[in-house]
Image (cartoon, rainbow, N blue to C red):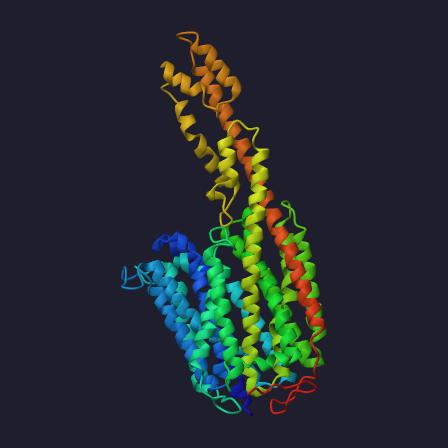
Length: 609
């Protein structure tokens, strides 16, 4: 297919602008979530705002791939953008009209509308690579696919900043409209601009080969397998463990539905996913490598902010900003890899070099201590970002170069799907590692604090819900929580002083009082009329000192617990990254085709049916 340079450029602008919307949404919403929960309530449903989007977007990716091989790419792109914008507007309106039939309160509405957003967002991601494959031959495609990584990186940089600004100041735009709602409404002007570019400048891009109808039964079976699979992996394993009936039931349902989907796909003439593609070595090995890379990438995103907040003591906003070096590294690595592969034609050595650099960064992260500096972590994240950069364009390029253009939609969407599923599985497994390691570390810290005169404070401090993995454990907050355990005792030491025998006996037997104070109170109780003022003043001073000491020790213990847990996660992730490097060694490196009209060279091209 031949297009004018102007139409090609404007089409590229349109699809990258649409991609920017979806990429920005992944970071901008997370910044606003605390304020959203404050307004809508439903803290226990906090995670479902992200999970609903993930479920919908991941499950729909293979379906978009099949649609792209069947219908006009332009129409699918227009549908995806429109659906994403519709979902964005609905999200902004969540809770505005009170409780709604079927949907319930504002938080439930937001969760449902985020799923609508995800249905559109899946198409924005999948269609970007597919349209680029239509516009450029493999020999030139790398440098343009490198722009995809750049788009992700820019969105990752601007997302937390824009999200924070709109959440804090957006209420000034239109009085009465909460600032966090603009986090969703801001998609509308960009989306309308993308729709204009796509509808007026993008060619129809009709797929080659025979047109076939989408098998709705296959689509239902696929969704019926992927939704419980992702849900079973995403559920909080501290509540629904791997052996719980809920988790086992979801995973069993996924296995049954996906098995039925596979059997049907092997029997029908035009399957939703052509399993013959797996006979192609490039397709199989590249997607397997992407599965492991996806796990490594998502673990970086999830657990670094946790380390920054709970070990280095930065704010949640600063923790979000700490991901910017990773994003900038991805931008540089993605664009550079795309340019190099288009110039020299070799992609496997760039993949291996990128994963090697990622492994170095991951190793350094696994060796961090609680005294690591912010600058050191920044450097490690830049290394990881540059190493991850080539994975965005090159694995997809290798897959597209090896398959027939008639199956380019299915092949391209598969690469995105395996990356996302890998991330979901990796995050679930490492979440279990985090929970078990923290539990063991907190237990050890509790034993270490047993010698203090306030064992109940120590127990609450190291194992209480207030110190969960999502909390901000700065020293000031720890001291507030510890001081709360002494609040009743300190009030009892304030004037008027206890004078009755029962009051003195209760105070004397309080285990939170230092032993010497209890002894002095006992001696004074035997002397009627004794002045208790100096004793109680000493008690207040000693308790204040104990609160400070205990808070410092608890803070230090918690920092060490989180350091141990998160560095262990990165150590395990290092083996995941190593697995992707080994698999990449076996990806056949085929000459990059100079035309979309010529078949893939020196490999079996699967045409299905």
